[in-house]
Image 1: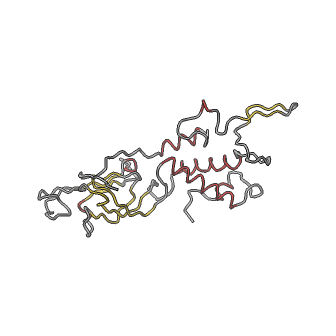
Image 2: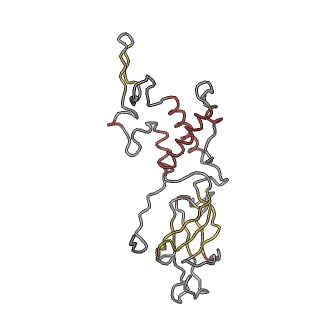
Image 3: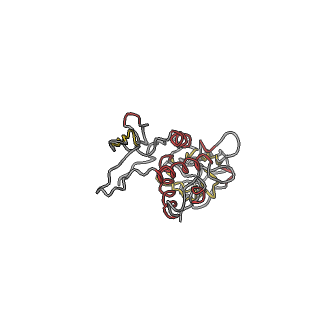
Length: 243
């Protein structure tokens, strides 16, 4: 089972009773909306070990979309031998300034020691991630975490609020209609005439914030997502692809 950022007990502490929602229902909601948060932020918030095959870009720097926690090894330019860690710097600082979680990268260090075909091009001693397709192999641990490896508190708060909102304010009616209508918040109700006016699910269209329309209108959740959203990465192909 995947690691979750919060627990069922965390949701129970917020007033969600077992009489209303079983543990399995709460856990399913946590997993569903955690997946949404990761997709919305374009990164994850626990340490994950990954082996990455990256395209060389003919420069001395590789940038990553997810923060680097640690690097186990780097195999440069299809070299079967791991590059000595003295010859590259990992931008992984999470406890101080600068905070490298916002600018994760590996940068090669110039040296005069190399003269082979894998490492330094020609004979200049200048290390490069030589242009190519998946010719750089990196094994490491990645994720946007605090310095102690924990999930950021604001991410836990956003997930908790989202789970409670989705459990207690379902968008589907339980009146037996098939298919059930998608309902938003009650905008107007007349008790004598038994008339109820629902808004669109997720709020009025004209008031929705771009990008997450229909998911939630909680400004705190949306602002936390904005704080932890990874920057978009735009890059040119390292070489021609014929497939």
